[in-house]
Length: 246
Image (cartoon, rainbow, N blue to C red; front, side, top):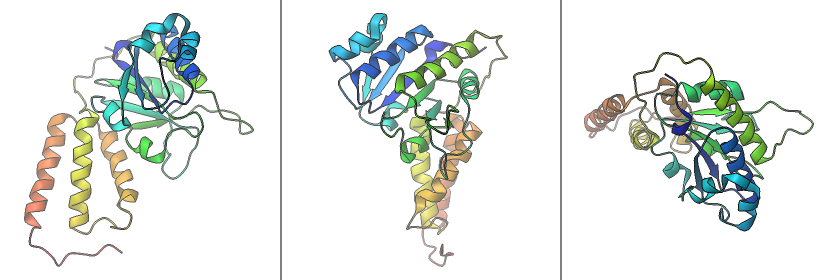
């Protein structure tokens, strides 16, 4: 059984123009999506937003508001952050069809995450997402309008959910709200034993995040790892002769 569209959320991080929010709502409704979350940004109930939403005004009115992306992802199992750029921390980028398949096969709630109109999602934002995706476009001018990008991904998702269904995945991936405490605990423990560079622990932590996100841990497995880290903390409580990270 595939993920129903009702379990997929579109998240806009700090949108700058009400009209774009309205157009995203219209694109969502065209493609059967109804769950919208907004992280800070401009007034989503501005007249311009309603003007461009057309018959999707109900999505504007029902949008959920959050102060941080971390909060917006807390109950989401699989999230895909979208980006136009590639780079050191923007690798293994999925295409829109691949992203749609990843969301459809998610064993729990899922989300598409879009960034600011002027510079998209930050590296920190993307590190909170389980996967990353991009829309291949012209090297001469590759920037798409927010609503255009949303429509492309929503279209692919709609097509993927209406295709032939696959066997249901029985496991339920732990939500982001359980992963973040795990990563905070992991960073603290790895700093304690000298495995992370205290001057730049984020460098390796971003790689570790990607490893564990790809593994699709369930809540029990997250708890097992937390228990292991706690045991390491206890065992190294009086251990000072540890290897120093260069």
